[in-house]
Image (tube, rainbow, N blue to C red):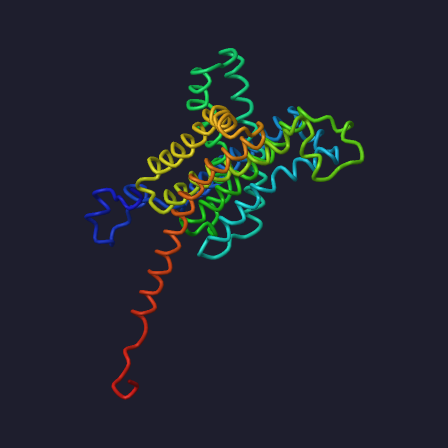
Length: 335
């Protein structure tokens, strides 16, 4: 716990100098060198992580693909549903609105950290070979779910989490949702770039091109909001951890586990669920997929929003109580 003290400091009446015995603060030149060294080490580690992620992004060739206007437009269109959900989560924040600078930074960091998940997923598949059936489910639950949710949370932890303007538990859900949007955007770009030939789109760029590449952009548009939901859950618990430092580790783990389980469950059931819906209703693959996604995201999105609404209601109730306690009692004349 952060408020623990050495027995000497606890017993001291405050008149004795305990520097370098039981307490410490930067006094000497060496102390200041140590403080500066620690600052450089921590900031340097963050810079190294971001730089490595950027180099991986370059190696994947996504930036080059996005330079094609058609591919860039498809990616932007595919991210719109996720953007709408992330915007609603931000709107639901009853505390002060989060600054645009932190939101943009979190989005960009999520775009970068997503590359770590792409590398890990590829390496695991390369080592263990193609996955089918039960092995694919295990892969989703042990690798994809935890890995992707961890890198999205990393995007929040690298910058927004350490800022003083991250000043409420609910802020974690907001930044988590934005990290999910960033992850979904770059993942959509990767899928679209690999499956759509920009040269074949021609001049007919518009909403109709969502069907290009066998509808890959439309599929990614439907899948995007899920990433916002998963990481908003994890982000909420990251916010809870920030204000409960004595239990920080377990709280963060709980959030990642919840997000990873929902994520892996979706990946494991979307094919079967869509197939069942198609068989029962006679719908083709894309409409059946849409119905399944609406049901799945609807259920877990509602659970997420209930958590956000509960925070909102409690926040308003507490502040109403404070205002009532602070209001002066009315005198008999005033009554």
